Length: 263
Image 1 (cartoon, rainbow, N blue to C red):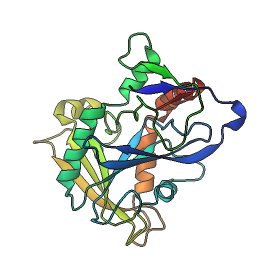
Image 2 (tube, rainbow, N blue to C red):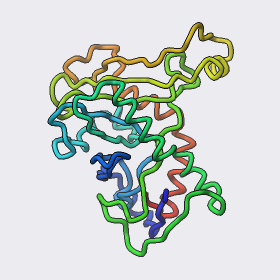
Image 3 (tube, rainbow, N blue to C red):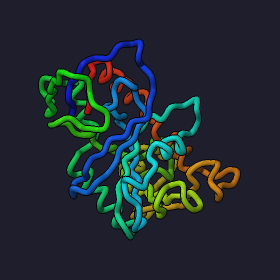
C-alpha cells in the first residue's frame, strides 16, 4: 500500500510545521523520517528524500534531535525544504555497510515513481487508495500505509561530478549537533558510460571504468566549526540537489494534499 486517502484540508490551515514519523526499515530496525509540511497533514512527506546514517554506538532515535537537524540543513528561510530526511542507525557501520543497507531499503520500498504512477493512473497503478474516516494522527502511519519510495537517481543532468544514482550522508556522532558538525557525503552506483555520455552531450567523456563511489566530508551548514568560506555545505548540497526535480515533484505533492492523501 503506497498511499492512504484521508479527509481534505481547509485552505485556511495551510500552515507549515515540522513533522516526525517513526518507522521501521527493511530489517525491522527503528528509523525516523522528518519533514516540513502542512500542520493539517502530518503524514504527507515530500517525495524527494535524503538518507542519513548515524554510526555512533550510542546514537538512537531517542538521542537524535530530528527537528533541529531539519532546521540545520535548511539552506535559507526563503526556501522551505522540499525534501524529507530519513535517519537510520547502524552502529560502527562503514561507508560500504551504509551503501548496502541503502540498496536493500530501496529494493524493499521501490522509488517514488510508484507514488507518481498512483496519481497519474489511479485505475491501473499498482498502488491502491484506502479511505480513513478521521483526520490523520501525527506520528503514526495508518494501518496499510507506508512511506513514499526512495529517489530513483541523484544524477544531476548538468553536473559532471554528480553522476551517481545513489547518495547518502553519514554522521559519526551521537547527535548531529555534536563535535565538528560535519557529515560524510557518499555518492555511489555510477550511472555508467552510456548514460554519462548521453546526459552531457559530448561536453565530457567518461574514460576508463566509472568510479565505484565518491565521498567527501562537509560541514552541515555555515555555523559548523569546520566551515570555511566557499565550502559546499550539506545544507547547500541538499538544496541544490533537491531543486533539480522540485517543480515536477511539487506539482504531484500539491495534488496529493488537494486530495487529502497521507502516507
